[in-house]
Length: 212
Image (tube, rainbow, N blue to C red; front, side, top):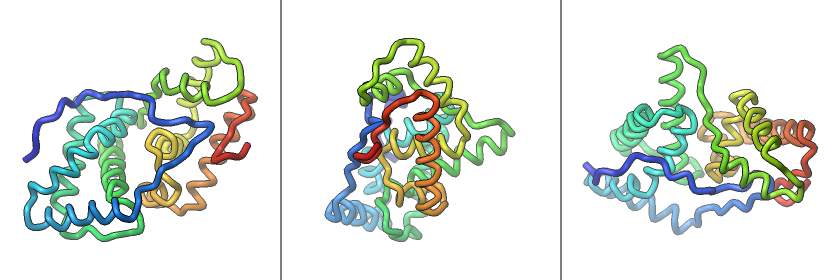
């Protein structure tokens, strides 16, 4: 259906946990994607443009919650197949098209873990933690890096989900609410609670959306 892609992750730093500037898609960009979706309803090959644009992002998103490349490749493929099969029923919900892909991917991940009766895995890369610390004015060493990595892994799943989407995927609160099927106020509460834990545990001056 589309060109074969190398399913290996490219973990380039894409976020800054303590000081973030989120770029929202412009109305023109959103409308451009809708025009692609309209064409895909008649010609499935057109959907390949969106596949190429979002494959790596969805793959990395899934991989962080599985830590298994083969499983990630399967779930990512399933995500795009589901989207393509249901493109006729896609409706605008006030968020970019990509949010729908993240929502499908999140549902597929949850289905997998329910079926396997396993606890969800969150893989946190050391290079992301290092970039996280570089956004503060605090001194840090290897011990703090490893302590922070271990502490993040111990956070409740609901907190890790919003932190991942907010800071790893640069999603705003409205998109996260859509993806996780919760309210925007619920997303904000989970985010603030998670960051408050980090403030208290590591005594960091955390800047969040320009405020401490």
